[in-house]
Length: 106
Image (cartoon, helix red, strand yellow):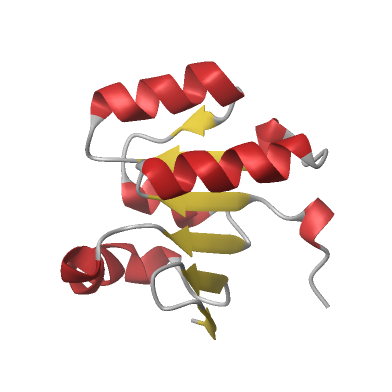
């Protein structure tokens, strides 16, 4: 069984939902150095990194490469493209699709 405290969490997408979720889990004592975020918006990405001391990834594939849990925080219209982009680095990971509120194993 996967221990969440021993997990590296990747947030794909750097918008409001990522900010809310990152804030919540860090405020519940989850180590910020175990969180990596990717975002197309560089300003959002740098703001998240500065505000929460999380790792800013260069791209989505880099973000998920070493993660155990992937939080898909992208708009539904972008989900298919992002899923294809990260597929090769997402084998045997737990993924949360925030907008569909479900767990998947890839």
